[in-house]
Amino acid sequence: MKTFRIIGRNIRDAFKGVFRNFSLSLASISCITITLIVVAVSIILSYNVDNFTKLVEKDVTIVAFLDNELKDEQIDEIKDKISLINNVEKYEFESKNDITQDMMDSSEVFESIMKNWSEEENPIQNTFQVKVKDIEHIDSVAKEIKQIDGITLVKYGEGMVEQLVSVFDIVHKICIVSVVALILVTAFLISNTIKITIASRQREIGIMRLIGASNLNIRIPFIIEGLLLGALGSIIPIIATIYGYSTLYSNFNGQLFSPFIKLIPPTPFIYTTSLILLGIGIIVGMFGSWRAVRKHLKI
Amino acid sequence: MELIRLVNVKKTYKTGVTAIQGLNLSINKGEFVFIIGSTGCGKSTLIKMLYREEKPTAGQIIVGGIDVGKLRNGKVYKIRRKIGVVFQDYKLLPKSTVYENVAFALEIFGIPKDEIHAKVIKVLELVGLKHKIKSYPAQLSGGEQQRVAIARAIVNGPKLLICDEPTGNLDPKTSMEIMTVLEEINKLGTTIIMVTHSIDIVKEMNKRVIVLDSGRVLKDYEKGTYR
Image (cartoon, rainbow over all chains, first blue to last red):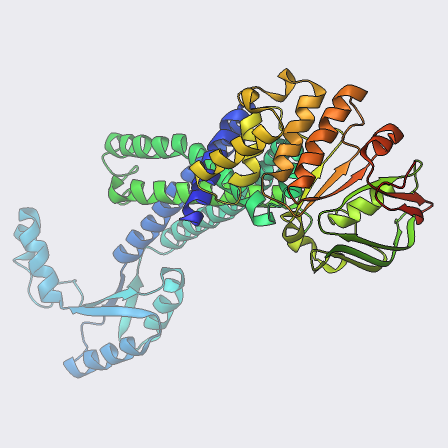
C-alpha cells in the first residue's frame, strides 16, 4: 500500500513537473520528436532494404548449363559435386526436354518453331538451378560450379546482383549507425534540457534532502518525468509512421519502381515500428533524467 | 539520557580553515540548548555536522545512537529523518501552499492522506497557523513563514530540532513569538539546539548556553546560569 502511495505521488509529481516547467518540457519533447521522426525514417528504410535483400536473395538463381553429350551417371556426378559446394542452399536439375516443353507451353510462337526440332537440332541444354544461402558470395559459388567438368556455362546476372546487394547493405548499415548516433545525441540533449529544469528546482531537491528524502525518493519523480517526456515526444513520430507509411504503401501499390522491389506490408510493420519508437523515446527520456539528476545528488 | 555526544571533534575545510578543534560535548534528551559566539567561531559548522551536511575531519559525533561522521552520502537520509532543521531563510517551496509545504515532508514517505492531513493540521495548530493553510509563502510575514518552516521540521516527530538563527530576519516581538513556539515544542519532549546572535533572547529564555570561540567550547552555562 505504502509503495503504491509513493508511486502514485511520484507519478502525480512527474505530471506536475512537466506542466509546471512547460517551456523547458516542450524543448525536451520537441527534441525527442525530431529525433524519433528521423529514427522512424531510418527504421522503415532499414527494414525495407533488409526485405529487398531477402527478396533478391530468394529470386536470384545460378543457372549451370550442362554439355548435352553427358550421360546420366555424369549428370549425377555433377549433382554430387554441386551439393558439396559451400553456401549452396538447394539445387534442382531441369532437363532440356522439360525446359523445351515449358517454353512451348508458354507461347504459341515458341511452340510453332520448337515442335519441329529434332533431338539434335534442339539447342536447349540440360541445366542445374542453384540457389545460394549468402547472396554476397554468389560469385565464388558460380566460379566453383564453372570449374566442374561437363558444365559449359554459368549465368546468374553477374555484376548487377552484387551491386544491388552491396548498395542495400551500405544503406542498411548507414541506417543502423545513424539510429544509434541519433539516440545517443538525443539522450545527451535531453539530459541537458532536463538539467536546466532541475537546476531551477535545486531548492526543492535541497529541501527534500534536508527532510530526509533518500536519493531514490528524489530521483524517481524526475525519472518518471523523463519517461513522460519521452512518451509525449513519441506521439507525433508514431502518428507520422502509421499514416505516412500506410499512405506511401498504397500510393506505390506496395512496390518501389519495379515489382522486384516490394515494400513491407503496413500491418503489423507500422505497429511494431511504433512500439520501437515509444520504447526508444521512453528509454532516452529516462536515461536523460537519470543522468541529469545524478549531478545534484551526493552519492 | 544522552542524545548527542561529540568526542574530540575536529573540522578543517578543504581551504585549510579549521572551524572546529577538539570539541567535546554532551546534550541530553529534552534539553534546550543555545549555541552562541562571534562570527566564525564554528557555530554553523557544529550544527551542520550534527545533521551531516558536513563531515568531521576527526573525532566522533553520535546523534541518537548513529555515528553521523561515518554515514555514507547515500545513507544521510537516515539521520535526517530523526532531525528537524529550521533556517534563517525558512527554505519554503514558493509555489506550494502552507499546507503543501508541511505535507511535503510526510508525502515522500508514503503516509496515507488522512494521516497526513491530521498531522499537518496538528502542527499548524501548534505553531498558530491553522487559519493560513491555503496561503502561499509570499502572502505571509517573516514570522509566519518561519512558523511554517518549524511546522515542517517537526511534523515527522523528530527527536531533535536544530535551529540555525531562526530569528535572524525577524523583529524582537516576532522573535519572541517564535521562541514561545519553540518552547512549546521543547515541552512536548523534542530536544532543541539553537544557534543565535541575539543575547536578549538567550537571557530571556534562561536555558543552557554553550559559548564557542575559535572552534572550542569557551563556556558551558547550566540552565539558568547565563546572565
